Length: 297
Image 1 (spheres, rainbow, N blue to C red):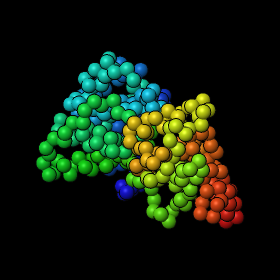
Image 2 (cartoon, helix red, strand yellow):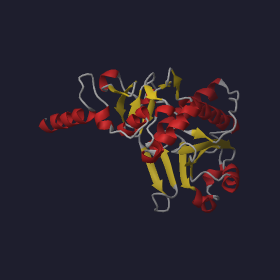
Image 3 (cartoon, one colour):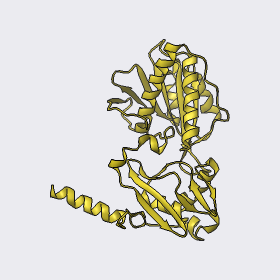
Image 4 (cartoon, rainbow, N blue to C red):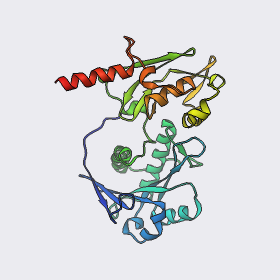
């Protein structure tokens, strides 16, 4: 599990539009983050941040698997690379890039960050990448390697705040076992285990889900986004066929308990009643009792 620490971010909304250009800085860090919608790129090309070496991510909808997809790249400077993608890559709708003060990042540094981020994204299997290749890490001095590890850690802590959760597995974020209740969802010949998290609901590695052949006839019609996600997670290897059902090869987060249960059963499902603790109490009952206990304090 990746260790986390409290930190402060300062967000400057450059033109007064919360969905427009945003410049983000972190306390006690030389890096800077620039976030912008694709449509705004022609207006920001002259900014000084685009003249620096940087690592960038292009984000857009994933029509094949639902959710979002990303492209990870680097540039020294970053501006010409983004200009090329603005002209030639169609899928992305917004972008984020990281730079530092002049001279703090060079070509080898950003190549290292690019290689590490692509590797982490492929391991986490959270978001489909548009990258065709996985570049090798460049050779860095011992001091540069240590500096880039710190830079990378700061990036990984900030990216979820920006809505990008492609680089960490569910187990990277989970707390200790004493801080969560593990629930079970069973039926249709399968058993799955999971728990609530800050991202929604996590199904644990080793859990089962019904096979594609045993999905409900109305599944695609009633829960189309989960139906599409099932195909994508099979393709990524997050779940794989196992003795007539599907088996999770890693912990994986879903946006809600109901989406998690629908994935398990291959049918529309109410996760608040489908997920139960060791005493048979459904999640809804657990939450109601926790709310009453909090009100009485």
